[in-house]
Length: 114
Length: 112
Image 1 (cartoon, rainbow over the protein chains, first blue to last red):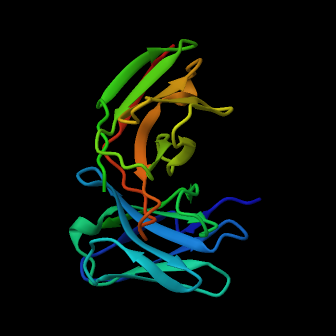
Image 2 (image 1 turned 90 degrees about the horizontal axis):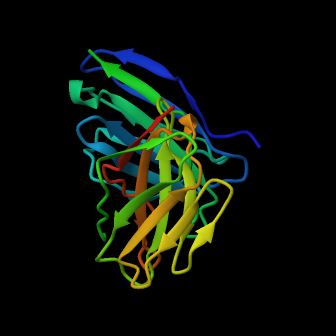
C-alpha cells in the first residue's frame, strides 16, 4: 500500500497570505489528523477529521481550518499567515475505528513565512 | 491527559542494546503505552505499543512495569539508522480524545 502523501513538500509565503496544504491518507483509512511541529513547541495536534467531519480539535486559533473530502483526502488551510506559523505540518492517517490504533504519518510540508 | 517523562538525550554504540526509559506515574488503567520515533527530516513512525504485558515486534521490545508507572523501549542491537527522537505516548481509550500527545522525547545518538 502507498503511504501517506503530503503536497507540497516545501512552501514559502509572506505574512498575511493564506496557504492550503493537502494530505492523501493510506487507502482505506478514514481518519486524518494534522499536527504542527516547531522547535519551540514540539509536535502539537491541530485537528482530526473522520468521514468528512471534524471529530477532535486542538488548541489553535480559528485561522487554522481543515476539511475532508469523500475520498478521505484532507486539506488544511491557514489564513492571514504570521511569522510564527513557520513550521513542519504533518498529517497522519488511521482507520479511525479504534482509539488505540496506530497513526501513520506523512513526510510533512515545511512552511516558511517571511 | 496523563503525562510522560523521558530523558532528553541518550547515547549508544552501534550493535549494542539500548534501553529507553519512560515514566508515567499518573497512567490510568485504560491508557495504552505507545512509542513512536522520528528520524531526521521525516514524520514520526510507529514503533510499538502495549497495555500491561511486555511486547515484542521486529523493531523493538516494550517492557512494562508491573504497576504500569514506567516502561522501557528496548532496541536489541542499535544501528546508525536508529538515531532518532523517541516519543513515549499514553493513549486513553475511555475518552473521545484520539490525538497523539507528544512530549519532548528522547534524542538517541548512535555512535559507530
